[in-house]
Amino acid sequence: MLDLISAKAFRRETTDGFWIKVEKTLCHHGDQVRRGLRGLWWDRDRAVANRPLFVVGCSRAGTTLVYRTFSEAAELGSLKRETHDFWNSLHPIENRGWKTHALNRNDAQPGEREAVSRYFYIYTGQRRFIDKNNQNGLSIPYLHALFPDAHFVYVKRNPGDNIHSLIEGWTMPERFGTWSGDLPARLAIEGGRYTRWCFFLAEGWSAYCDASIEEVCAFQYRIMNQAILKAREEINPAQWTEIAYEDVLANPVQAFQSAFASAGLSFNRHLEQHCRTILSHPYNAFSEIKKDKWKSSENARRIERVLPRVAGVAKQMGYCG
Image 1 (cartoon, rainbow, N blue to C red):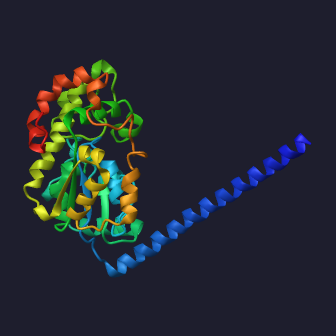
Image 2: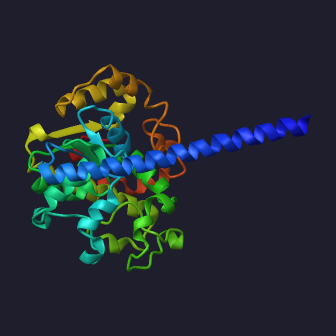
Image 3: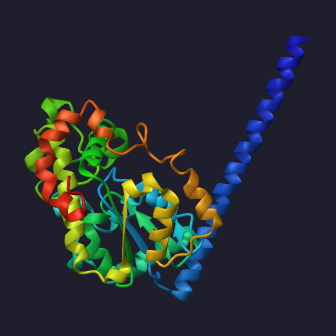
């Protein structure tokens, strides 16, 4: 009897598995067909993207949480994933000697606005899209040259917690360093513990190939936020939104309602409910979400040592102590 029951269960599981595979295959091919039709439609209409949103900020500052929350807006098309590979295909970092991920206004080439518009329309079906990746903050002048009507959402986080999270992220090169396998430099960060560069390259990175991990992360925090603050000077304030990660922790509904209003987006009941639960189901969090958690971490002394190196930019960001 048990053998008979087991056999029936096996057949049921096998059948269910078969139909799950069939469903996935049909969805995959359906997506391909939709993208093909959208491509044909775009080639006929050639409508460039309208007021795209770019989420910028230092890695591990909460940019994914903000990006995924904005992606819930009905007005925006979103790939709901990072787009490093696409942007790198337009401007391969190896062609720039692996110096930096930063792009300036002069890097914007004829036809790129259309290529970007077509790419996001094919995948989202909408002319207005939102995008996020680790390097966008270094390339605001370039993105603004492509889309003068773009809106930028700047996510900022206090230096202690941000550097702490960067240090944690550097222990996961399989997630944050997959792009740097061909980096033409031998890394011996922390005496050789870290051998794959993570997150992004900025001008001057090669001076940190044998530094301590806290020095590397302080450098990344400083250089990224400095680049964003400098670029902000050239952007119309009406096209700029700032959101502090600490405000999200304190009251996510209020923080996002204000940010959505600043970006000219509606904030409906669906978004309110989404914001009420985001801290219970965070994106890419390594540990408990709370403010100043770096102070009780094993990295506390390391971070204290490098905080003076980022004090200037932290003050500009509104963190004064």
